[in-house]
Length: 613
Image (cartoon, rainbow, N blue to C red; front, side):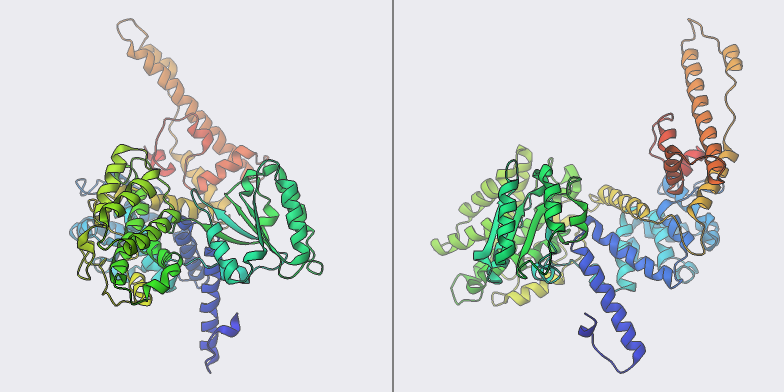
């Protein structure tokens, strides 16, 4: 792998190139087995870990970015008309970090600048007012973005990764079976991790044909009673060097221990070197962990974004029609334009799901198979009819191929209206533009497949809601939810040691526990309340008052008791029970411990804000 790097004369330059190559190779290989929602997180985590090692990111700031904090003091919101209470608390909490003290003090005096950031369409690329545009680094500017516009934090992450690692770390990674195959051997299984509605069988059969193994590929769909047949198939293939394809392993949990033993007993000296074991399974607790850890893996799901979906369609689906694509047939130009329009429609349908009920009432699992049959029908109908049969194309795609999955009448109506934008006479020209910005447009009639691929790679990485016919604010709620999900996931991945120079988890938890105990109020005097507000027929709410006071006292008592026990456990004076261990993790993540939540009042606030409430 290192031998594939360029070899300059300068040794330092050589080391730098090797580091860059190994970093991207690691990213590519790991990304192949990650779901789409986790790929950006892995790239961001990889980037941060490199910067932490180079002392360019402070470990305290990194933990604070993920877990958040509590304001050190109460201060009035200077602009409640556009700064929410949550945003103001986020900004005030930055005083916990020494590098943000001046920023928090200066914030009320520079509201006009920050309002511009707040109202911007691209707040992650707006300049901060002086001197913070230079005194804060790229990572620290993400704190400001998280406070003012949390819906754009993931966009800020992408720019941060691009700035420090390169654009290729945020570009969609194409799934390649040949790369996965190179990492395997006769004793290393190859696993497809499935998502809803996906099936890699067609791609595997196509790859087997390319590798001249089509006649030596034997498959079986696992289920009740199929275990002995699968074992015999595998035993026969070991000697002759065939490929074995076991589909839907999650449907045969009782046979998985037997499969685990068969894989563990594979001996490279006794197994034919061309033998390969291919498996498919959804994420399942019954799937053997040892096989999962010692195998080459690939996730099978639609990629994230219109750009990635179109790139995948042109690489996997259109490649079957390259001969016609580059022929001299009179309808090739029409086919190119309608094909591009159809692939864009497919990407738009898949991405509408992220908007929740604004996209579709029910999140339908459209698949590559729907697009494949539509492409096949488009090719067939163009050759059979002298004129473009739009009525036939709209009916087959909208009512049968895609519409066959749609069960809601309003969703069907929405789908047909979206389809009408992509299957109509206006799109059959090189001057047609699909969106207001002009980013999505038809190419010339003579454009080869390579030009289409280059054009798709230049499309925007993030899709604007206008492409889907939605308002520009339509993605705010889903983007905010995605941001907080990303931060929570990254927090779960953190080790118990925050950093070499930073505090350990025990110190962070101990400080948090001590801080909460210091501000914990005293219990209500129930006797005094009963005397001042006696339970009378005329004053029925006094009953509720007594009941709520009793409930509140129980909550205060459980908080006080568990915090004192936790501090003793951290010092080694008592045993760290499972409850206290879970509580430690919650305090470290700035979330409400489960034992408190069971006695407390329902709230979506994080731990710090609840403590101050």
